[in-house]
Length: 147
Image 1 (cartoon, rainbow, N blue to C red):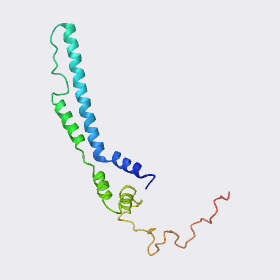
Image 2 (image 1 turned 120 degrees about the vertical axis):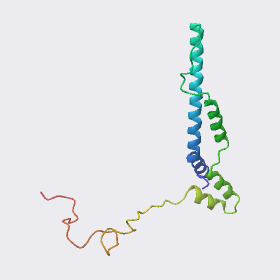
Image 3 (image 1 turned 90 degrees about the vertical axis):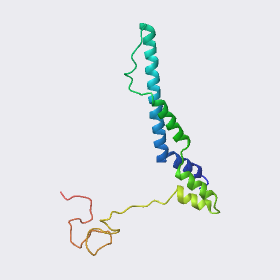
Image 4 (image 1 turned 45 degrees about the vertical axis):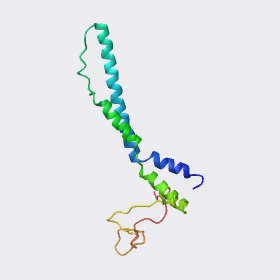
């Protein structure tokens, strides 16, 4: 935990789904505001060149883009990550190292399907994981072929 603890905490934060969603929303909102700003700036240049007003009602981004960006920024700024709450609570305990290990570096588990219990090879009554039913399946253990 001493050598990898900081890395595990950082990876847990950076890989949090909540953070991914907040950054994606922020990126989309910023892109929309930038698109609208670029469109309006271009329209302004056209107006100056042609000497007449340019119709900007065709811009696909509405005036609400700035409000959406402010909302996305607020959501990002006030983001609460469950992993951080677990880390902070673990650090308050005497056995913080073991708690952090359990949170950040859990043991690898394998999920079994409901149809197949552990050790079941499909042969009734024989749950040793081997499908050998005592019959000769033609495999004599050699990998070479008789030609």
